[in-house]
Image 1 (cartoon, helix red, strand yellow):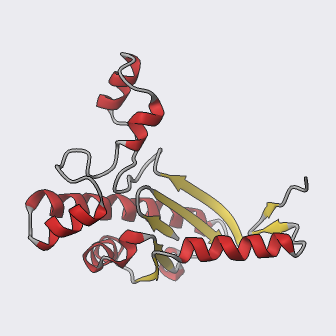
Image 2 (cartoon, rainbow, N blue to C red):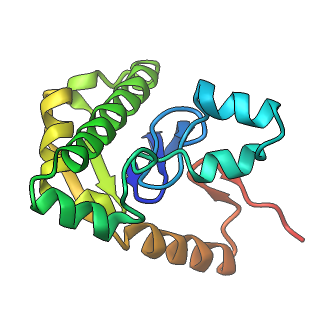
Length: 175
């Protein structure tokens, strides 16, 4: 599962258990948030910004005039080169993150060609990004929609409320 929106989070699940995850602060950026590049690290070292500030400004729109996904999408629809490059970069980095998670699947006897790839988040519904990720992975993806994370969290909350002690391999702590 690769959730792509303001940031990107990719999770590998095998046999109902989370076996690996990568967050935007490490690898693939989102629209607004992303990993710290050398420029950001230098600004942090010079105390020009905090690491959190750098992270929240490290997304694919960092070097564009666009402020959010709506503006980026409008520019893409107008075939503006910087918007296309932003979506191309995002697609490639998300595909690389997904490919990295497929490596973990081998430890659970699931070969990469048998992995199902789900996309969620607001960007998952942009057909161009979905097709680019599929091209890079040489595999089909399934978009489960921009609200799927919220629906999943509601189901987790319901399970915990009803007494679940384990959610996808993670122990539920009682308070």
